[in-house]
Image 1 (cartoon, rainbow, N blue to C red):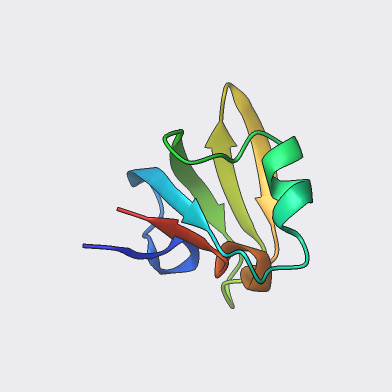
Image 2: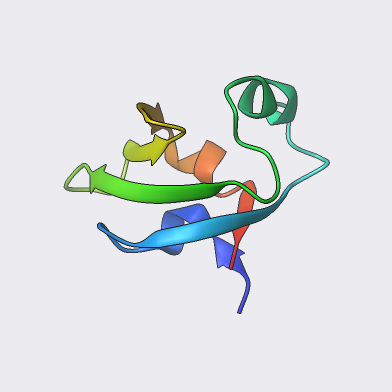
Length: 74
């Protein structure tokens, strides 16, 4: 079932299926290694859900909630 990255719980591993084509941060996310097919793990979230820390390709990356909403995962 497809959902956005910000809906995934802490500690969960998931696979990126797409990044919204309308997003103004799409190119930046792809440059950081978030591409379709890559596995990401949610390693932490702030108390109000913004920002979100993900583990991807062996490094930790912090994303804003609006950036995570552009990423579709399964």
